[in-house]
Length: 86
Image (cartoon, rainbow, N blue to C red; front, side):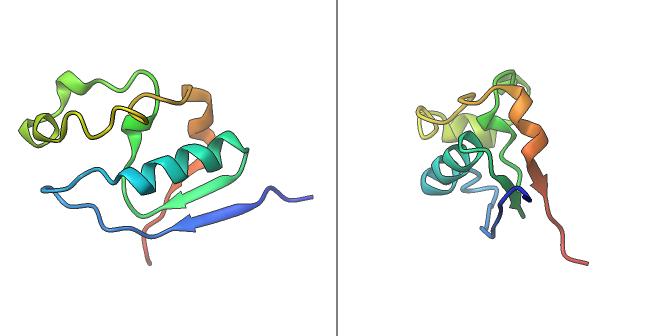
């Protein structure tokens, strides 16, 4: 039986790089063992994400990711795929 896959299309901008609902959905789906395809980067949901290496945009977003920032073990990255059209 194939692993269920979910595609999430969402707009991520420099002004709003994080999205509470999207990130919690991704966390939940990965915890359930599903493969998740995204069209935006959500590396900050994995342990080991280096906040200090991010620019000023990330610092202005601080506080919005308190439930999902670095919430998942890095092993689950193997079930997350970055999708680009084309």
